Length: 292
Image (cartoon, rainbow, N blue to C red):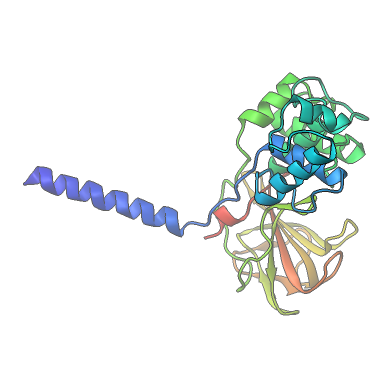
């Protein structure tokens, strides 16, 4: 009898764990860098207009077969040596085949941009070109990871990007307003969305997701419009962007749930919403799994 009870307890515990997993917000799943690089190449040839998400969906397969037919190759949807050669600079080098630095272009650069974005350091458009923005993102990642921030994506940098999972928040946070998340963390078109958006009526109250200290409050020239940044400890900061109004000041201590400002559409925004970002020592992380 005790053995049966023990098994029942184990079963109940397992079921409870499954329920908790099911109820917990799911982290965005990272696609494959090599498929993202393929999508960049197809986009450059005018054959793919979807999101650079790194997943082999129907749109990607259709675009690849169209490219193969255009170049007189067997339209088998396989990225073999002949297909890679036909892509020219967009297919010439696999990631890790050479060290990457400013001015380089190629399949490997597109894969690098994709990995940097998922590790919290987006560099603008996924375009396979290692320009100033990708160089800056690469150096920030190297410094964050404890590598030499020399702007050269050599074996150590590529190995770390491939091996390490994307960073996550070390602390739980509250939802900053009563609204459902719409645009989530991850690729969006040919760029990367480094937070989550909460569409809401203009003027809706925005609350602190956790207790902390306001380190920035006011206008941001980089596109966030009215922005509040709160430091929480353990390297975590929360960012609240596109606010119509700011109700706190730099240096002020705030408690979880305390009003920070109001929803707006300031900066580069197409409508009223709150853009929330979580950053861990400067790296953008998916906020959704941290929300409680």
